[in-house]
Image (cartoon, rainbow, N blue to C red; front, side, top):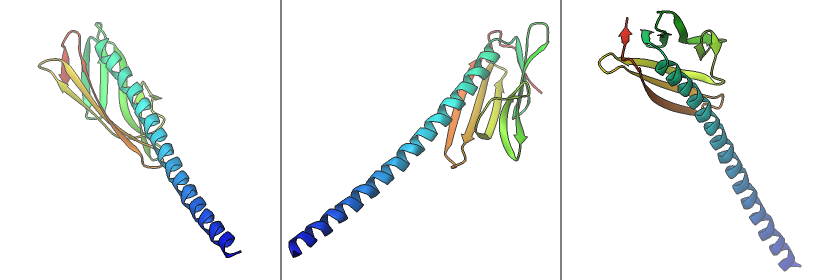
Length: 147
């Protein structure tokens, strides 16, 4: 009888350890999946900004968080901003929200010497998982201005 109780105790102890390990691995997997989602969403946004910059005749950096792209007729084609909605910042393209998650930081840097636009962005989800992204796009005609 004692042997059965000892065996049951050991079995229950091992079961608790395995259950705890499973919960820890499940939590880690969930955080990894959330981080992957942040990375994918941020990459999509940066790729769109790169396409718009490359397709523009010239680009103006209005502020560190605002960028305007123009065509050969000096018509504004795209306007990127960081805008607050319900207390959180989001990347906006022509007034339309691009990011699902809040954007903790967005910076545009122009190098007028070689026509390179550098975009740095940090996004975060509700669990405070954060992803920092960095992209560079070359203007095809090398006509950049910083006001």
